Image 1: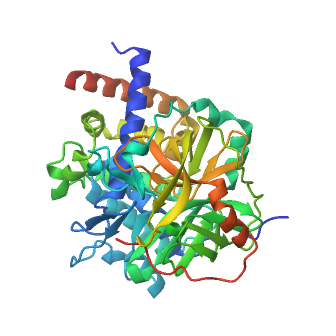
Image 2 (image 1 turned 180 degrees about the vertical axis):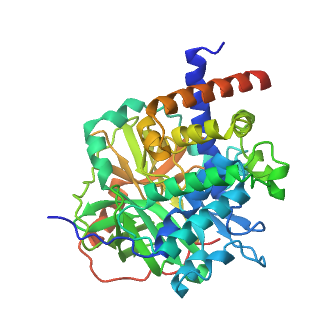
Length: 166
Length: 323
C-alpha cells in the first residue's frame, strides 16, 4: 500500500525546513553571509510569485535555484561584505564565530574563501553537501569530467595554500 | 608538487572545517534573524533569542502570504541536543551533562567506521525521521530527530517537541513530510511519542542487550543537513540524577556514555546496534568533551515507549525548555 502522502503544500513550511541550511550553503559558495541571505530570500520570493507547486522533497530544487542565484550574484559582483564579516579571518563566518574554531580549521576556511568562485562552488557541493560527482554535474549542467577536474584542481590549490600558511 | 596523500588529507580537512563552520553558524548569531541576537545556554540546549532590530532582515518576505507564513518567519530555530557552552571544559568536576560530571567519564576506544556498512544498521536507517515544529509562544521552531518504533508512531526526546503548538511535522528519509501530533509527553525522562497518520514505515525494535565497548551507529538529522549516520561506541551505562528538561526536580535516569560525533539536531534519534536494533535514544553531546555524548538506554525508555505506542489522543507539550 502506498502511504498517503502529504506534500508540504505550504511555502511557509518549506521555508521553515530549509531556509537556514540554504543560507549556509550560499554563504560558503559566496564567502559572504549578507549576500547569501539575499540570495535565499530571492529564491523563496520567486517561488511564491510563480506559485511553484510544492510536491515531494523540495530540497534538490531549492539547492539548484540557490546555486544558480549565487552564480548570478557573483556575476553582478554584488559582494559587499557586511561589517560583521570584515574583520573575520575566514568569511563567511563572523570574527566571533571564527574564534570558536581551531586555528587549523580557520586556515582551511580562509584558503577556501580565497579560491576562484567556480572551484569554491564545486568544493562546497562536494565536501559540504557531500554530493557525488554525478549529482554535481547534473546540478550545474556540466560534465562529470569537468566536476572531477575542477575538484582536483581546487583541492590541489587548497593544499598549496595551506602549505604556505603553515 | 602535491601528492595524492596530501590531496586526500586536504579533502578530509576541508570536509571537517566546513562541518565545524556550519555548526558554529547554526549555533551562533545566525543570518536572517538579527545581528544582535543573544545566545543563551541553559542545561544542554542552546537557544537563540531574536534581537529587537528595526528593519527585520526578512521584511521582504513579510508580504508573502497569510499570517501563518509571517509567523514562521519571525521564529528562530532551536537545534535540540546542543551542548552547553564549550567554555565550561575546565575542571574535572565540571558538569558535562545534566547530572554527569567530567570525573565520571571513562575512556572509550574510537568507533570503528566499518559499523556503518553492517546490513542491519543500514536497513534501520530508513526508519529514522526528522522532526520539526513551531512554538510561536516562545518565538522558536525546534528541530530534532526521531524514529519509527510502532505502527505510525515515532519516538523522540521531549525537548524536541517541548512547547510546540503548530506545524508539528515528521519527515522521512525519503523526503516525505507528514503532519504529526504529540500523544505522549514525559519531560522527566525526556521522551515524547508522536502519532503520524499515514506513515507507512516498518518500526525499529528496542534491544536492552548492549555490550560495553560495543559498536553502534548514531543516526539523525543534525542541523538542516540531510540524513547522517556516524560510527559510535558504547562506553558505559551510568545511573545519574539530574533535573528534568525544564531544569527542575531530580530525576534518576540510566544513560549510556558513547563515543562518537553527535551534533545539534541529532537529539531524539536512535543509537543503533550493528544488527539494526535500538540500544538507546540519543540525548546530547557532552559539554566541552570532544566526541562524547549521551543516550538514554533502551531499558530506561521502555515504559514510556509502551505507554505511547498506541496512544491516539493529543497531549499538551507544556512549555518550551528554558533559554
